[in-house]
Image 1 (cartoon, rainbow, N blue to C red):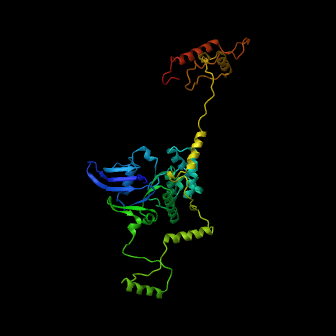
Image 2 (cartoon, rainbow, N blue to C red; image 1 turned 90 degrees about the vertical axis):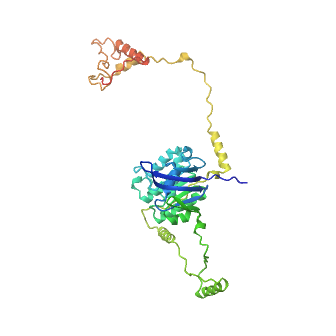
Image 3 (cartoon, helix red, strand yellow; image 1 turned 180 degrees about the horizontal axis):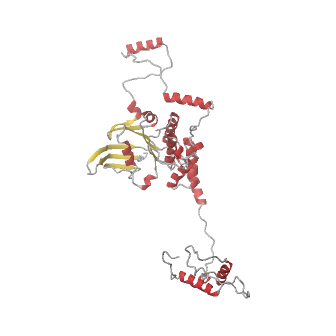
Amino acid sequence: MAERRLAVVQTAGLCKTFRDFWRRPRVEAVKDLNLEIKPGEVFGLLGPNGSGKTTTIKMLLGLLYPSKGRISLFGKAPTDVSVKAKIGFLPEESYLYRFLVARETLDYYGRLFRLPKRVREERTERLLDMVGLRHEARRPIGEYSKGMARRIGLAQALINDPEFLILDEPTSGLDPIGARQIKDVIRDLGRKGKTILLSSHMLADVEDVCDRVVILYGGQQMAAGDIGDLLAQRNRTQLTLPAVSEATIDKIRDVLASAEQKEILDVTHPRQRLESFFLKIVEDAQKSNIRTSGVREAGAVPEFLKKATETTTQEIVGSLVEAASLEPKPLPMTEPIPLSAKPDTEPSREVIAELLGKAEPKDHEDTGGMGSPAELKPPPKPDADHSRPPTVADDAVIDSLIERADDESAGHSDTPSEGSP
């Protein structure tokens, strides 16, 4: 018997009430909401403005605490830190750093998830291909249009290869081409095992990509189920045939009238959707190599955005072999260094003498906060008879430097007070 997989999202009796300063109930945003989102499912969250969609998403992300009820993500509370790494989120408005370019933006979010540099670079290039922004990857985000910002926002939501993806109005601000590409990406991610929660006012988009939906109104669940079952009209039957003549249609009418005691309600030619017609026009224009400054054609979904359980046996064995080859090798044995061989830390008189001898005399009245002029006084000039070389320092100066070094190492050096030169 196959093991039942744990639901990605479960809510039971979920409620959220916003209160005023006196703790009196002001707005009941969510009322007794029960959701269950299964692994690998594209789930639609629908409703008019003020129906509780955004509040529900914030509670799933742990940004709001429910007033009553229970939330479970991957069997844990939304506030559990381990859950955060499994979630990708595209908010309704993409708040990105305006002065970062696209590559820097994706690299930044990859760093937040502590991804290695090689992984960040590889995923960045593949995601830029997927959303069609490779040729605009060096432009600052602040110069992007809203549609381009939505595309890079989707890429940043996927940089950590999340198991659960929350998309709030993903096609907002996109042209029909971009909207179709984003829907294709969502469908591909669903086929690859990603669990997706989609909130949108574009009902056609939800109809195209979602498996199940829930419709909210006033914070309450009004309808829920498989989208095909919800939209099916059981009281009607539709036939799709190649084009036939009016005489054939009349014969069909007679057969239905005699056999089923029913008549044909309407006979029309089927229409293609405006989206399909629009995309065909654009595709023909692209084939004609008409130049445009807009977004280029988007690429395929990267291979790293696949279901974790689809890892093959060869990949597992390969990763184990690679890990074994990277095990640290034992260091060669060396003889321990005797304590008597500890280097002497006392300053060498010869070294100090050489340094003081090479120093050029300067005007030491302006010390720049490095000590008093007396402390920085250069060594005395040699006698006129040149009885000793000019590089030999005064023994008194050397002794004073050594004494100061010994005092500082023992922790007894005199620290100048604040404000002294």
